[in-house]
Length: 163
Image 1 (spheres, rainbow, N blue to C red):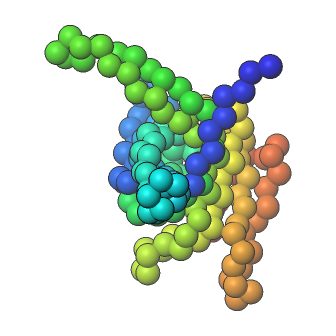
Image 2: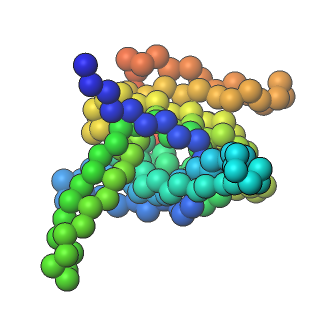
């Protein structure tokens, strides 16, 4: 059995960049930073290490990410690792490891006046170009209206999201 799964919670390091492939598919890329903190046993000092992750999302998830995410937002991203290779214009072979996002949940509230929903969750099926989606919410105040629950067999449109 093999497993290729990545789950991270971190802060976005750059705004999403939405592009469209020549075939008309939406793709978005953005960065997420994660922190690791520990106490150094030798010196007793607190240490911190930052890891930067490149995230790519396709289809409707890409459109949702480009609409609701921004630099500084705290997000949960789940997907698979993928390394791609290419040759640069200078002839040097390069590679980049990315997380191909299949699920994304916004974990913080949007800045005041941004009009974004808090705790938005988007889960997609394994097919990047024909995702099945469900919408979930983080705990919210009783004054806010609940978001609709959509089964995994139904497809929702970005226009149907009520925020």
